[in-house]
Amino acid sequence: MARLSNVRVKLCDQILLHKLHVLNNAVVRKGITEGEMEEAFKRSIDYRPSRLTWTQWNDGTLSILYSVIFLIALFILTPFLASFLEVILGTRCIVPNNYLVWEATRPLSDCSYCRGVQGPIILANLSREEFKPYAYSSRPIIIKNAISHWPAATLLNFTFLKDLYYKHPSALDSLHEDCQFLHFKSNFQTLKDVFRMSEEFQKGIKPWYVGWSNCNPAILAELRKLYPKPHFLPEDAEMPNTDFVFLGYEQGAVMHIDYIPRLMWQAQLRGNKSWILAPTPECDDECRSFSFYVEPGDALLVDTRLWYHGTFIYKGEFSLTIQSEYG
Ligand SMILES: O=C(O)CCC(=O)C(=O)O
Ligand SMILES: [Fe+2]
Image (cartoon, rainbow, N blue to C red; front, side, top):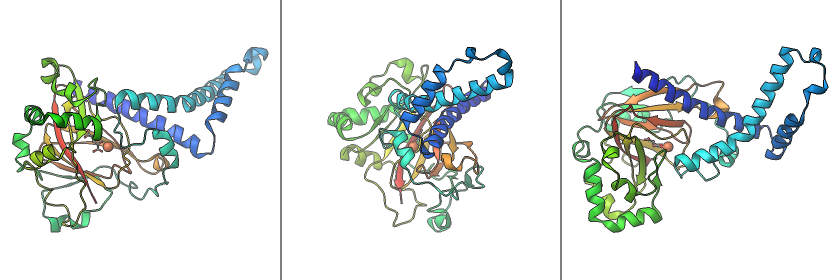
């Protein structure tokens, strides 16, 4: 029960945040500038209903006024809140710094990717040939037990990663300069901080969640000995020369959309992870949000360029994934 209510609260947080984005987006798309919003907000604050008699201001009128003021305040505060959250929560930096500017200039999607979609397609492990019809779909797909045979599923863990980076100390610095480190809601600022974490964090008594790209060639080569390119992906699928690792206890990635060139695949190596997917704002009336979870051994495919997505992990549980792109 506690688990369920915990999940519901997290879902509500994520959906609320997403709705703030939607709200802001709707106003920006109407051509209303930030200056105009601010002006409207200031006017609404300066407005003095006391100059009118109470009889002119029955309950209904007052509640409309309060709603308008509330909405205008939301329109103005949303970009600040979003920027604040980006800085504080460490949203993936493949999203441009000014997330909302990008959101406002992003081409509108035609909603065909989400219309009628109520959850991921769940497939049993399958061959490349059988996967062909799904290969470049924008439908979220889970392939059960697709990666459970990978050596990474048994060998890769926090200690393995720590030992590997300590064997290549320069990789810790190159990560800082050239690769992405995402701290999300945790206070770890660098991968060095992650590997120096206290016992309380390491045992999951205190929650944390981070992700980084393995763009150091030596580290990448070592790690790729533990996992192949997923066997079901098309032979000619283009792959980047870096992969991401996401790991941690309890917390996950905040709701966001990715500004990346390809589709995403993710291998769930350890623990269960819950995902929430929401349509782009312009499809909010036609499509719906939904959540699901993946288990160890599952592969997940999501078009993270179209679906807003966030993740979380049950209290006290650990999740480890390898993630990359294909297209
Ligand atoms: O695995 C996660 O927690 C987030 C991953 C993500 O945002 C992505 O793959 O685009
Ligand atoms: Fe993402």
